[in-house]
Image 1 (tube, one colour):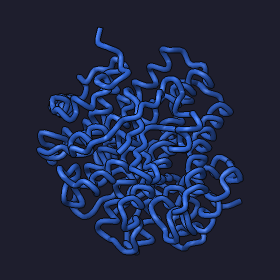
Image 2 (image 1 turned 90 degrees about the vertical axis):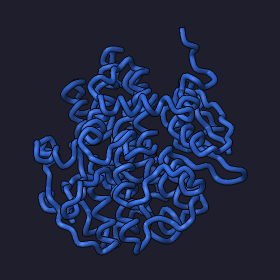
Image 3 (image 1 turned 90 degrees about the horizontal axis):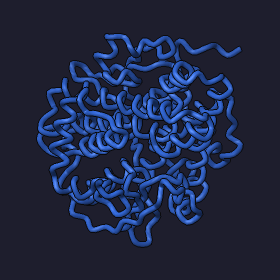
Length: 216
Length: 216
C-alpha cells in the first residue's frame, strides 16, 4: 500500500494514524507540498485535484480524500474499529470529524494560503489572523460538542478511539503549527493530549516524519 | 423528522434530495442564513457550529454535517442505496462527494463571504473572483475524475444515483447562483442535467423552496 503524503499535511496525518492503529504496512511517498510538487504532471495523474493524500494499492486506481480513505480502511480492515457500531454514534463521530475535515482544515491549506498572499496581497499578519480565525471557529464547535454531549468519554466518542479523534488531533497539531493555544478548548485539549501519548498517533505525528524540521 | 435548513443552503439541498429519493417524510424548519438566524441562541443550542443543516428525530440529539447525515440516512433507510456495494466503489463515491463537500463548498459559504467583506474589505469583484476560483477548482477536479474514470456512467458512479451526484449537483447549482457556466465541465454538466430532471432533485432545488426569490 502506497500513501502519497507530506510530513506537514494534516490530512495525511489522519490517514497515517489509522494505518498505524490498524497495523497496516504502507510505504509513504513524499510529495513536497511547500514546493508545489502536488502540481507536477506525475502527481496530477494520480490525483487530479492535486491535493494530499492519495492511497494506491497494487494495480488499482488511486483513492483520494482523507475521510473517504479512512472509511475504506475501516471497511477493509475493521479491527480495531474506528467507528461506533450504532448508526447514531457513527453519525456523531462522522459529524465531529467533518467539522474539522470539511469546515475547518480546507480553509487553511497551502493553496488557500497562497491565494491570500498571491491574489489578495494580504500581509503576513492578516494571513495569520485568517488562519487562526478558522481554526478557532472549528475547535470552538468541537469543544461545544465534546463538553456538552454525554457520549464524550476518554476520547471524542466513549472510551475508544474513533475517526473523530484522528481529525480533531490533526487540527490541534495544525493549531500548534500556527502558535495557537488549546486553552479555550479544555475538553478537546485533554482528549488530544491522551491521543498523542498513544504510539500510533505519536509515530504518525508530522514532526516525526522524514523532511520535518528537527527540534531546535 | 425535522430538517433545519434554508432555501439557499447547498448542504441542506443535498440532504433534501436524499430524503426525497428515500421517500422519508420530513418537516423543514427554515433558518434564515442571510439574516444571521443560524447564530441565534435557539439554533446554536441545536447546532453549536451554527451552520446548516441539522437533522432532529423525536427526542434525540441533533445530527450535524450534511455528509454525516447522508451516511446516517443510508444506514437507517438503505433503499434505494446511495452508495455502491463494494468498498472501492464506496471510496470513489465518497471521494467525489468530499471534493465538493470538504474542499469546495466550505470556501464560499456565507460566513466566509462575510469575512472577506467585513474583515478583509474586499471589493465585490474580488469577492466574486474568490468564489468563482474555488468553485472552478472543485468542478475541474470532479470533471477530471468523471471524464477519465471508467466507473463513470449515466451518473457519477455507474448508472445509479449516489451521494456523489447529490454533492456535485449542489455545487453546480451553487455555480449558477454566481453566474458561472458549466461549459468547462462537459461530463459533469451532462450528469447534473440528467439529475435535475429527476423529481427528487427537482423538488429539492433551492429555488423551489419557501422563501426563494420567484423567477422574474
